[in-house]
Length: 136
Image (cartoon, rainbow, N blue to C red; front, top):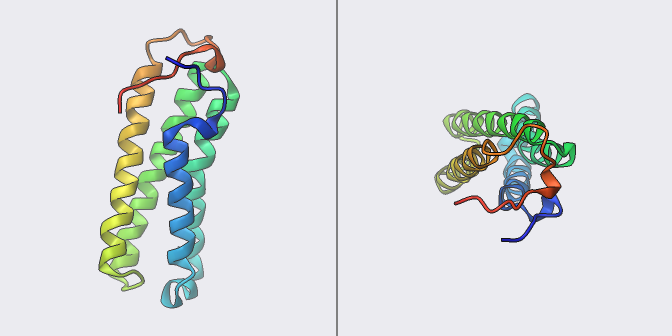
């Protein structure tokens, strides 16, 4: 097992980065781009997924990493919910609707597994000293 030295190495952060990219791409499209409120909300929610992972990792304690991971997971659910609203308003195509919530579910599931893995450590353990190798 290798010790993860930066949040950029975490698969959930990499997937969250893709979620942000895809969210921005879809919200730049015609009808969605005009709904400023929904566009802003889903962008902020998807950014929160990615940023809470990085913030939790950089906080360096296991308890804080678990806490921030939980916030990330919650934001992932919010992002997924907004995708439903966007689809209902015909802001996104069916193929996008099928892919984007699935990406959210994948990130959420992997985040939960990471949290469960981290719970085996003591709350004051330093994240950068752990061998993070959770089962996907």
